[in-house]
Length: 92
Image (cartoon, rainbow, N blue to C red; front, top):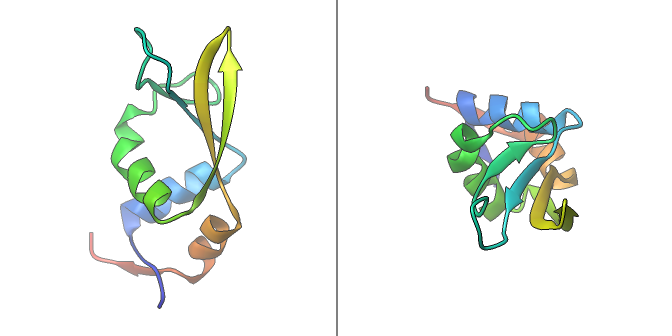
């Protein structure tokens, strides 16, 4: 079955696939739940798309620490890159 993406989902996935990653703070504390691009830019506006792509299995996840704080680093995997090539763009 072909994956269906909205135009916005496709643009979000395309941005993330261009050598970028998302870091999600997973350590209890002030930063818990903070979502950042690799350059430190706030990525909270992408949270709905990130959750969807993660559920669909389009990301690889790696645990890392930044200044001792635990983050999950999400990068687009081969399935995500293939989805960009094959997905049917719908609506919006």
